[in-house]
Length: 281
Image 1: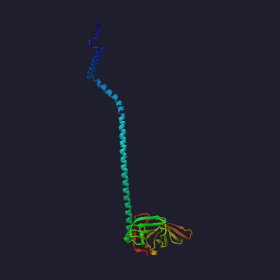
Image 2 (image 1 turned 90 degrees about the vertical axis):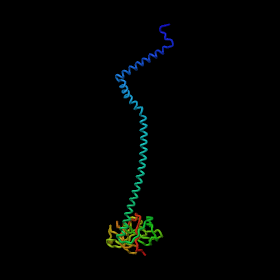
Image 3 (image 1 turned 180 degrees about the vertical axis):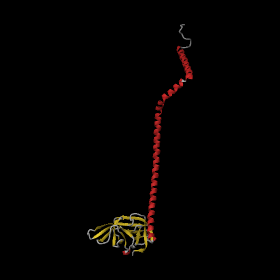
Image 4 (image 1 turned 30 degrees about the vertical axis):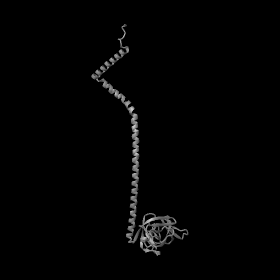
């Protein structure tokens, strides 16, 4: 038998594998003993951990980016919802404030009406405004008060500032007021400062009346107050009608024409006063 022949039943490859295994075991035992004595494997593991951290960071980057995107989307959605709720709350609050301001303004106007009536010792009736028609050819108010409330045709209508107009039609529950500014309306007046008697005409504008046919020699000036004269019996004397804001010659240059700013607030307010005890025939 040759000297290099293997033991019966054992192949050369198995012997080599066994030797390698033994070598690996010896190496492992040597490394364990060396690490136990010097701790160099722990240092190697720590260095390896430090070296691998950038790789771990890069490996986790997609996940972190996804989470950031999800968080950002959730935050935007939450902020959008909160903004919508806040906008709605702001609109509601604004509407409430506007209603309160309107109510305060209306209370102020009502207080002014009642104060004016008390100061003048007037017997008046408060009437709410139901509708208004300020067409240039037709200046009317419809009041939410009629014959069932004691309203009669010819009653003078005033507010805290002055004369508004007069009742021209009465129904059971409503009444129609012809405003001073109606083109068909004329009111005898006097200039409070000088006593000059004139007539104020409506011009179809809520902010302007007109004095016509003022003699050039009359003592009438811009800034003069104009009040009812009581002539004609339609309006009691002494109620404010307006203030002269301009004087200019008419087309013939024989007379002056005056622009008058109404004393009453003809284009605002929700209530007026009806004078009692003095009705035009």
